[in-house]
Image 1 (tube, rainbow, N blue to C red):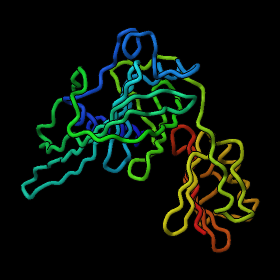
Image 2: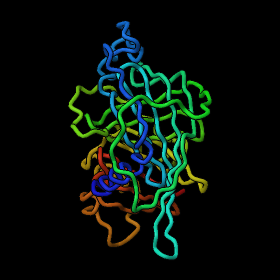
Image 3: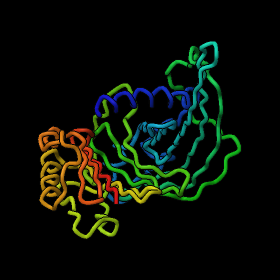
Image 4: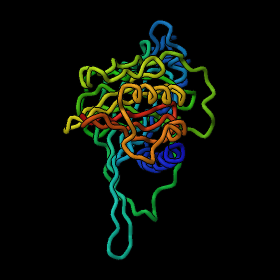
Length: 306
């Protein structure tokens, strides 16, 4: 999974740089505030460490066709670029990529583990085709963001956030329906992001006991319920992070004690100890667990098929 994540980082860089080749939000360096009056609107109460850690650019690639870039400056201003791409190869072997982008700008302030976004303006700034042989170089122009094309106001919304380390930011958007996501963002910059990072964490979601059989064991305190997804077929996907391989192995032992068994004869507890994906059954119910060694930041995925 580490190699996969590294490849996604490279893809994200290529895609997102199409968006920012000629435009980018610059940091206001004047006194580290917004207007030089000694007040930083990004900071509420004692959140100075969080603001300093956020300042800069952050990439997230959704694994499908969209990349996100958030840029926070030290004066309470932000810009967010979203780029969606598609590609095709014609009958003579020429590959084209279409990059469609939009930009969101406004003000931000930090309150605990929430980034509050306000005075938001949105614009579908560009849509441009690039021949893959002439993709612009990956330099980023420095300067103020030019005026948006036909901007429209966007209501206030929040981002939950936390840092796994100085180079990795988790952001969870609550923007309704068409633009909500939960992703790990990589710091974008030539130099390491050597700053003090905040220790606050997004709380665990409740264990989804109402979606599972009454005798289905809870994962317990050795991990955090990061997200819960129920698909159209009623299958329940539970994403758990901040766990360890030992905790994962102990959970599989608990499932075996509760009457679950390996679906395939070649699967053994030794596979579990290596962090491999395993399939289990109990009556007509099935379960797939992606092991803790498959993901960065101690993440596993439990998929329950009722």
